[in-house]
Amino acid sequence: MTTDARPTRAGTKPSAQPPKTTRERVQRRLRAWIPRRHDPLTDLALTVPVFLFYQLGVVFLRERDGVDFFTTQIFRLFSYSKPAYALFTIALGLTLLAASALVRKRRGDDPAAFFSVIFESITWAVAMTLVLGWAVSHMAAGGGPSIPSGFFGKLVLAAGAGFHEELVFRVFGFWGGAGLLRRAGMKRLSAAIAAAILSSLAFSAVHYFGEMAYDLTFLGFTMRFLGGLILAGIFRARGFAVVVYTHVFYDVFMFFAKG
Image (cartoon, rainbow, N blue to C red):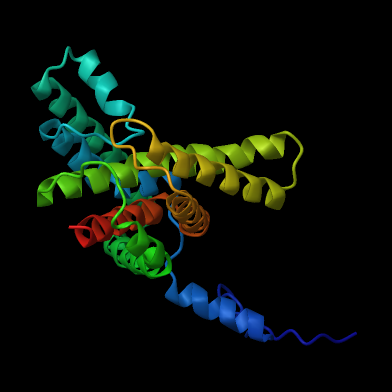
């Protein structure tokens, strides 16, 4: 009985099989061009700059992100002491960075991953702006919250929206919701679709409550719902860090487009 296998030298691995179908060739090419997803700890560490910028910058603003449940609780914990709050926030950020650096060193990951995340996120944010720009242009004249007029204030609020809203609606709402639905008996795909829809509805709805509420319109609600679906897709495909920075850059584009 004969086989087609060729002998290999001791200690060497057989060469990889060339792709046989167009689909395999496309998948291999995409893997070569698109960076792989990071583990959750690295994803979280990559967003520490956004977290620190918002958590320290918001001290100087009157406004806060609508789903920022962290800042007020920490202020209360330290009896509203700004120095104590700042030290705790910085220590938390440095702890996450140190833990991630240890994991990445053991695995031999590329330390330049941060820059690839930034580049990819800007690309996604530009694409979102092009897709949703028609709605934004129609909403520009409508009523809305008072956005800080200064450059610094807009950047701080964009960072807060990117970090806290993605943590609440994509990590807990979409990913956590899909997990609960699967445990309840739904199939994986059905659970993911249902969680994406429900979390995106909640994401859109939260923009119409609180101090920074927008005026409720069908167009505005639909635009934010579609934005939530897009962000859920980015989170599912590319991870937490990419979706956080995508949200930040998109909000920066929108804030400055509205003046």
